[in-house]
Structures are given as C-alpha cells and as structure tokens.
Image (cartoon, rainbow, N blue to C red):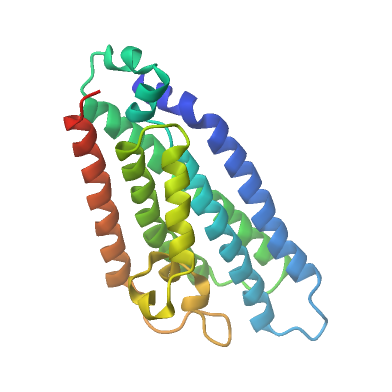
Length: 235
C-alpha cells in the first residue's frame, strides 16, 4: 500500500519527465547526426552523443528535484498528514518507502533516456561505443545522487510544497556557476561529459571509481540525515 501511495503521489511528475526527457534528448542526437556534413569525422558523432547526455543531465536534475518534493513535512503544511500518520507504519518506514520509490524513478529517468540516446546515436551514426555510454551514465548517477540527496534533505527541513524544490533549484544554480577552482569538489562538474572528454569527445584516463564512490557516500549521508530528521521531528 505504501509503495502504491508513493507511486500515486509522483506518477504524474515521473511520466511527464520521462516522456519529455526521452523525446528531447533523443531528438537532440538525431538532429545533430542528421545535420552532419559528409566529411564529418567520428569525433563529430561522439560530440552528438555527448551533447545528448549534457541535455539529459540538465533535465534529469530538474526532474529529480521535482520528484523529491512532497513528503511528510509538506503533508503537514497542507493538512493531510493526519491520514498518513494514522497508517500502522513508523515514520522511518514511510520515509524509506518514499525514498525507495523516488530512487527507482530517478534511475528510470536516467536509464531509459540514456538508452534512447545511445539507440539513436547507433542508428544514425558510427558512434557505437557502449563503454562510452556506460561511462556517461556512471558519472551522471554519481554526481546527480548528491543533488537528489540534497533535494530530499531540503524537503525534510523546510515546510511548504514549493519551498524545498525552490531552494534545491537555487543550489543547482550555485553549483552550475561555481568557480573552476572548486571543480574537484563540485558534483555538477563531475557529472558533466565535458569534464572527462578529450579532443575526440571520448573519455580520457581511467574510470573515476573513487570519485564516484565518494559522491555516492555523500548522497547516502544526506539521505540518512533526512530520515533521522523526520523521525525526530514533531509532526
């Protein structure tokens, strides 16, 4: 029942985001490949693949921020929390289900458009490196997890349906305009394909497993803090 409730609360946002993101990102790659001049090199087609993932990153971060809005604190502000708290479940259980549903939807919002991007790139050009596609998905998931955790934390700290996502969007804006001297600590810079692509628009150097694990650890701490805050808060 809790999983179904979480789905009902987010399905409209999820389905709209999924359809829009998949269509726009796939079209971006198709358009670039379709307009490629006859003398275009392989580098150009990997540029098209990279551009599709850059657009996916932007749309995915916005979608995840909107998916994480709501929750117990927002239900308190709109007066509907009495029904939720009357359920024979603990607050931790309620939060865990909400987080689980949100994470599954976030993963789908990354994998499905990412697969569409790669499929279009494969069908309309010679950029067929599956390794490159997996690399883009890895850096997007690791860096984006931090922002997903931040959005969840904001929804556990701030009342109001739109206040938390507004603050989260402001954090995204700050991260996007952070000085380059802070690039090593900036998850948005990490998840950008430009930060890892060489002159051929292919990844350079070894896979950043340690950096990705560090961001996932930070996201885990943010999620844990969100659950603990709600568990102890007077609702």
